Image (cartoon, rainbow, N blue to C red; front, side, top):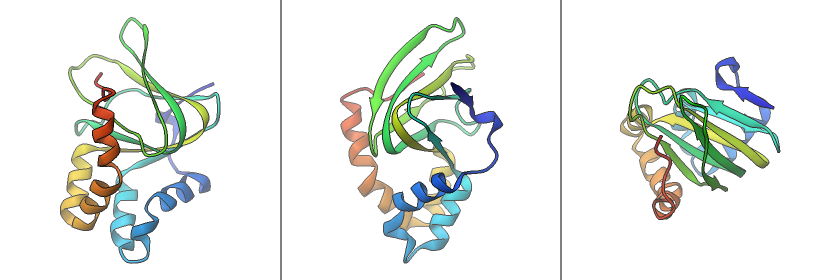
Length: 158
């Protein structure tokens, strides 16, 4: 089963819980920052053996995608719908979907086990970090070490 993000308007309780667990270190002292980044981002749960498709990068630029928990395989499909496996992601793996052209490529994630993804445009993330510098520090310590490790395994560039 493939689900498109275009149909989704609101997060489920499980998605909200996963998001709060991901940001639990900030929640006790920086509730406003966590609420703000939640308002800018999308959190998506994918049930084992199901897929979710992102039709295009954020209109504001590149998209940062973090596997909050679970295990997924990411793949891209271009205009000719040729499926290209990119890589697998596990807890706190970081994917960056870069806007390279106006091609209508799609990016899909297939859950190998129940998984939750966190998506935010890099421009919105920059804005959030400027408003709440504590987010910058938190994400740098938590996400970016995995992102640096991911560079050795090639980040997603579609």
